[in-house]
Length: 295
Image (cartoon, rainbow, N blue to C red):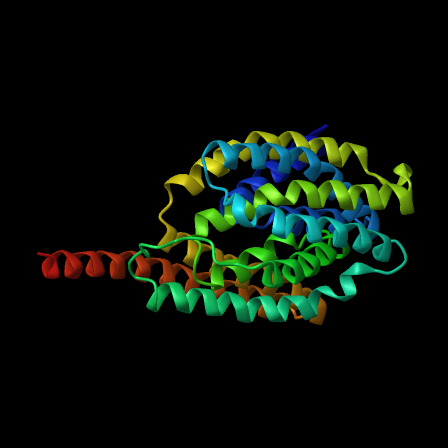
């Protein structure tokens, strides 16, 4: 019983992170299940089953708070859902954690790009935040995100959200809301694939229910946080979180000594905190300058 309470708390924290930053539920939950010795395919299957409930609650919450850009939602969701089903079939015969380190390297670089862009080139919000993404851009992004989400137990948010935020034309809060809302279809599609190719006996139902309870409670809170947190700060938060979570994946894959791994985590967190403080102070200076030059 105590373990189920802990898992519900983990589901709450994971969804709070995922719903407010556009990523994190799969990565957090997958790491926990793998730590308990559950096979990658069974872990990913259980997580996606839980995500049917958590992403439904999260998507509904983001729609309620108007955090969703409906003009790019379907262009991203449909190819992602198809690809997630294929990824579930692929993982059923291949250990998915083999691919994670390679994706993580790319995402770390993207995380640094997002940090730099929001720290130095996004001081004031754009007056024109319209969607400018074509199907030629969103379709391959959805395909890659959906496939690696199913294969890695989490990847839709970490892949799609950073790429969209790194582009101009849509605010971070709209990216997060749209990615979280579209993830419902990804979770359903991947779950159908796992049921078909693995069978229902592979699901860890206690973990699934615990994650669902915690995640559903956290979903509306996270959507509300996205609504009130400034866009310029969301970019820094997302960039730092991408770097931290994907560094964990790489550190695990190369089996660094515990002391060196701990120092690496501390270094990343310190840099992240410095970036947040800098952004707050720099924002105040930018507003002051803008007020002085305004008639």
